[in-house]
Length: 195
Image (cartoon, rainbow, N blue to C red):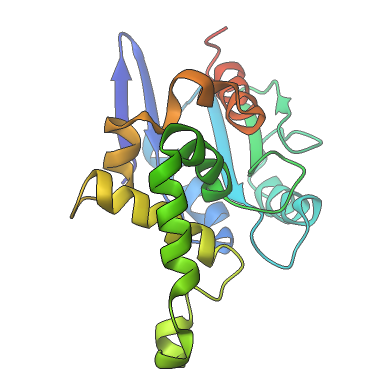
């Protein structure tokens, strides 16, 4: 079930697909459950060996079977109905993830904590860890996720990263002008018809 947020008469459902291959089936099931919606946005990372365009084309092709009007490039919208968009983190052009953006924001908001977290993650002796221990950190976004996780653990010990993103200064002030943050905010504003 999606997490449903409400503001006035507007409802937004957010659902984690747990992987790119799960997106089409999950979207079809969600649309059956929800019925008519005014907008659908898909957000995915570009943290694999695939290029941003390749990931976009793959998801777009998988979703086309559902009969939706789909955009022709990452970050663009198809007017629909429903309005649809596919956004590839971090900026529809570069490889990376949400954590790629959060690293920049964390460095701006918490420079000393960022530097300490980076040093800590870099100093871990990986030869003392098993292959199983290393499987996540050796992924393309593993180091970025570890640094962001360290910062989050200091700011909100024992809580999820989502809590610190909500409660702390990751996404406020100058961080809102980071091009990737501003680009994603613009995409969401257009998708949700907030502008």
